Image 1 (cartoon, helix red, strand yellow):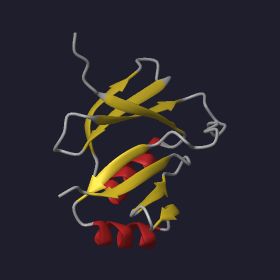
Image 2 (cartoon, one colour):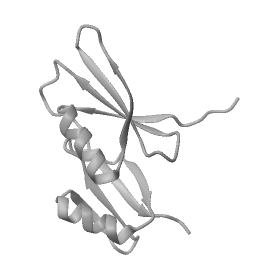
Image 3 (cartoon, one colour):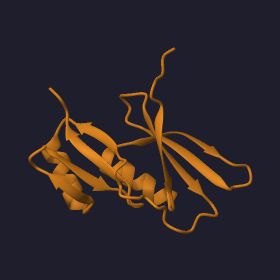
Image 4 (cartoon, helix red, strand yellow):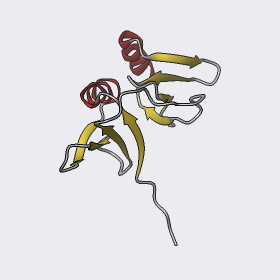
Length: 123
């Protein structure tokens, strides 16, 4: 038996805002979309064009309150080949929420408050 990672899910309040954020901040693009016939939900899968792993954004029509993210200890991590340029982009966007220079990492926060770890690509 062998398991393979497929995707991580984040529920979002404003799908279009989240799609723009993930495209602008991380270069993730829509790979496929599922929509309920009654319009009650939309699921969009985003990819990086390099790996099979996807980020699934789920929008629920009837959800109006922000999601309870707890202590934000659960997060997604992405590596980047140009760490300094990524940091500059995220700094300009104002989405850096935590930095740990001694570990060489930082976190950004998406429009719904989910944290995303940015790490330099291993060489």
